[in-house]
Length: 375
Ligand SMILES: *[C@@H]1O[C@H](CO)[C@@H](O)[C@H](O)[C@H]1NC(C)=O
Ligand SMILES: *[C@@H]1O[C@H](CO)[C@@H](O)[C@H](O)[C@H]1NC(C)=O
Ligand SMILES: *[C@@H]1O[C@H](CO)[C@@H](O)[C@H](O)[C@H]1NC(C)=O
Ligand SMILES: *[C@@H]1O[C@H](CO)[C@@H](O)[C@H](O)[C@H]1NC(C)=O
Ligand SMILES: *[C@@H]1O[C@H](CO)[C@@H](O)[C@H](O)[C@H]1NC(C)=O
Ligand SMILES: *[C@@H]1O[C@H](CO)[C@@H](O)[C@H](O)[C@H]1NC(C)=O
Ligand SMILES: *[C@@H]1O[C@H](CO)[C@@H](O)[C@H](O)[C@H]1NC(C)=O
Ligand SMILES: *[C@@H]1O[C@H](CO)[C@@H](O)[C@H](O)[C@H]1NC(C)=O
Ligand SMILES: *[C@@H]1O[C@H](CO)[C@@H](O)[C@H](O)[C@H]1NC(C)=O
Image 1 (tube, rainbow, N blue to C red):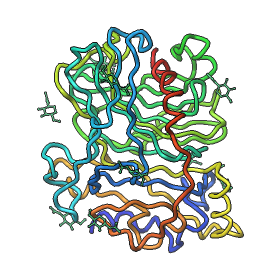
Image 2: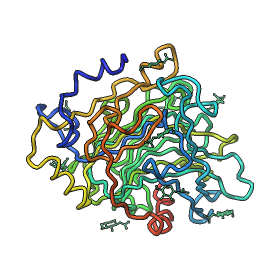
Image 3: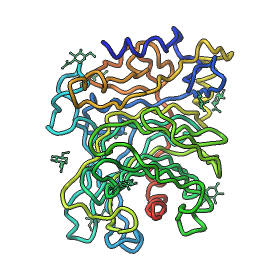
Image 4: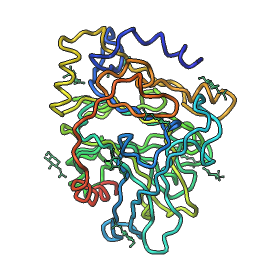
């Protein structure tokens, strides 16, 4: 397992009882987080994503509320798992053909005035501070917005948003945004604030998988691409606990998503890894039980992904193979872990967490979310 050899030296023999750290505890600067969510979508096949920690959303936003020429329709069935056929590999043929991973579709058909897209929210709603990472390949069809974000409300939101119309022959872009009281005052427009930055990428996000990451600390949000630091934002850092989201949509607005796309088109996610603190008392008690006295040798440093985790090309099986604590025996004590075909769960401790239902929340917040994206 070549990928393991690369990663192992960075890990201590700890079993992670005292959490997971960005940078090692011996470094000048580090941050420790008590909880994690890891999804290996290259090896996840399920009809019920909620069993893997994510709730696909189903709601409509009218044309008037979407503030574009089309309404938006979020449909559960537009999210599909498509695992690799070979459970031992990180590249190769997928179960349903096409790109392996979790697919979030936007549909071409908008004849009924709505563009049908996809969105999912983490079941966990207790997420406060953390390091959040997604490996994904964006849509290659102009006219969609694909986003990885953390959300509490319209003035506490951290976004990495990709507009496929911004991808051109050699490069692409990611829109890094904190939605803040300022952007709310400006009619949900963060442009012109220090919390909005269009960052050019030296590659096309629709041509390969890359890791997009944000580290949210009390005094800053740091954005990364393939492990390389991009920018810090320090104004109006969120202070409440919320959910992680992913979505893929279009409303035809020429000022943002553009489109709609002229073909069904997917954004494909190969993993999500989130290491974070929790506001849940139950989780705090669990942490005290497994780490009664803070011991830095019982903290596991989170490996930094320094290359694009891309399965294409002759080295694909090596580059796409990334480290998961939840697949490493005993490195996820007290954490919720998910079954994948790659890894029978029996090694990792599984605990269930009291989870608040999203149902009421969803209908309330998504009307707001819709407008949160308008720039
Ligand atoms: C990790 O260390 C780097 C410097 O090597 C620093 O820029 C970064 O802010 C540190 N991250 C945290 C979360 O402390
Ligand atoms: C996360 O919570 C733990 C336990 O309360 C604490 O020790 C740690 O400093 C917190 N991390 C951050 C970045 O605040
Ligand atoms: C999906 O899984 C969740 C969590 O286990 C469960 O509550 C829900 O009933 C399941 N939904 C369906 C349609 O089976
Ligand atoms: C969304 O609108 C479509 C088309 O009008 C309708 O069929 C569907 O039931 C609506 N979905 C929700 C969740 O309201
Ligand atoms: C990919 O690498 C894994 C080890 O990480 C190995 O078990 C598997 O056979 C390899 N697959 C291919 C197609 O080379
Ligand atoms: C876009 O991606 C799809 C599959 O993801 C592929 O079938 C299609 O050929 C691609 N189109 C272009 C223009 O690259
Ligand atoms: C978001 O929540 C904070 C804290 O509860 C509140 O002060 C702020 O007004 C809320 N923002 C919006 C847009 O509702
Ligand atoms: C390609 O896109 C980047 C980022 O959006 C932009 O800076 C650059 O000027 C564009 N290049 C061309 C040839 O359009
Ligand atoms: C995990 O998933 C595999 C494949 O779907 C299944 O055969 C196995 O029984 C599952 N294991 C557990 C512990 O749920």
